[in-house]
Amino acid sequence: MTFIDTIAKRLLHKATLTAKRQIADHTFHLTIQGDDLANLNYIPGEHLRILVGADKSTSMQDKVRTYSVWQYTPDRATIDLAVCTHATGIGSSWVQTVNPGETVYFSGPKGKFTVDDSGDYYLFVGDPSALAHLYEIRRNLTGDKKVFGLIYADRITDFFADLDGGTPFQFQVLPRNPGETVIEQLHSLIRQSQGKGTLYVGGDSRLCVTLSHYFRYSLNWSGRQIKTKPFWNPLKTGLE
Image (cartoon, one colour):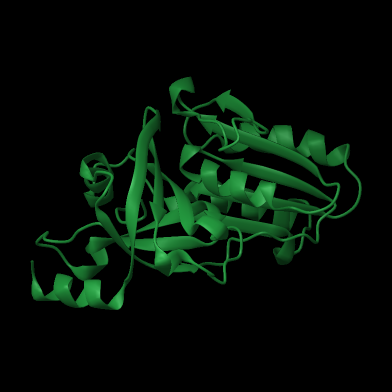
């Protein structure tokens, strides 16, 4: 173990991986549990930063990956995570080799791509890398909210259900970065909706930019109505 790894483990919180199973072609469901997960000041939609590169000869930045909290259960001191493996980086390697019983080192939860109850209706858009995150936000909306979700992937075997087995979002097989197709579908829904809308977009950074620009400048939505989170970029590494 390197000196950097030793210091990092002393500074980070820790939990035990209690369960791991593959739920889609490129997604694993992990459950972690431990005293450091008790009584967290958690807002639905926050994430953890997890040390995945211990004992690897790489920079500290590349030793850590960000994963959305799929569900936090405070009375059991557990957090569920959905970890995608589309990339071939250090995070994908970690999730495929880590086993129940091992210690997971983390910081957080934190983040700004969180639940916002101020809307009258909601549009959720993303690929499987954002699916667990969007499930968590949807489950924690209060009141009678109209919700539409469009989750796309280039093959059907990349989709997975929420923790309760439900599939409240519409799944569509589409190519990557399907901006025009998504805009066409969302525009039709917006015309049928009343009140203040809220848009959540997660996943491919290109689609986040396209939809943010369209809603802000073509539909004149305010910045507070548009929530985006680029989980990955096809030209970069380190966002997995």
